[in-house]
Length: 504
Image (cartoon, rainbow, N blue to C red):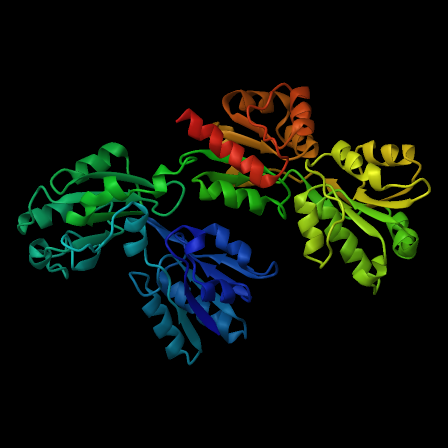
């Protein structure tokens, strides 16, 4: 089966539910230049990923080659997703690919996508139809060869229409297209806009009128992919622009969390307009020795308390427990403590409610919250990272408890910096650095080197999730400008947003 899937115009959130669903079961993904790379993360880890993008003067594979590739992969019995920018059938050549599959007698499905012709103007604050301004909208290819003797586009008709004209892929021919509309009688004062990289965090919009929009776009250095919008509805841009007015618009943020944990912070910052670059500084791996954990799991009934110090710890603990053929019933009457709300939520995901959750995400505060509940002689299992501060085990022992420390995972430094992030770091195009633990600080500095880190931190706003992380940053030089009162990811994101709201 081949699925021709519209990926939307750039914002990965614009893919349809069905599009994401088929992507998650793909064995082969054949993707375009304009499909968001973020969507490739939805494909199974073992899926074959093939790039066939086209841009001016450079085609990874000609269209005939793409058609044959889809046929060959489908004939091999594989589930193929052809991931196309925008909608497959709106200037997407999806029809040609579908015809090739049909001719080969192969099954296919079309999963429509959000077309750039509508979404990109919308993200620029331009409705393609609007009562009193535009009751007609026309989509036109913008890259028809201007040297052709006869154009397939009825320029005289387009020039006379009162509706909105949306030209796709038309940067190269922008001046010629405007000239033809003017020659056909379209008023030179007709509002117009050009939108580059629409629906992405790199979107740029320039506005003008038909007689000068080409010059305005050229002066601004507008490059493909871009869309030209001509019509009275373009005049609403100043009143309706919303995508480019969010508090973190234009800001590039480095998120230094594990790959598994980065999504929550990325989602919050991206919703505020930031371009987020993930630089995982920790890889979660098994502890060097499972013996202490396995001994504890075989005798869980002897513990009065089980203490978790991270969501990663909860996940690793449960995976080992279930891997031994047990389930949550093995926890018996033991009470549960979580260091913070994220850890408590991780327990909740397993149907477990933490008995103690301190107000602040800090070992000292958790120890204080536990103190009234601990009796001398209580046996406590502390499920934590292999390397961690000794505040909890020492403090609990001073209360008379017997503490068994069971490493359930270890945080390992990653192999390197992802290419997109490395390019931004080398160019100094980073506005905000975020750190959510001391380990993320140590490992990020290790990845960059102290001198490079200090130079970067001098130019960027540095945000730490709490005082422990902030103190670790100061060991390397920078003092964080942002540090929330609550040591949580939502609070960190809110503090970053508030910081830039105040600046503006």
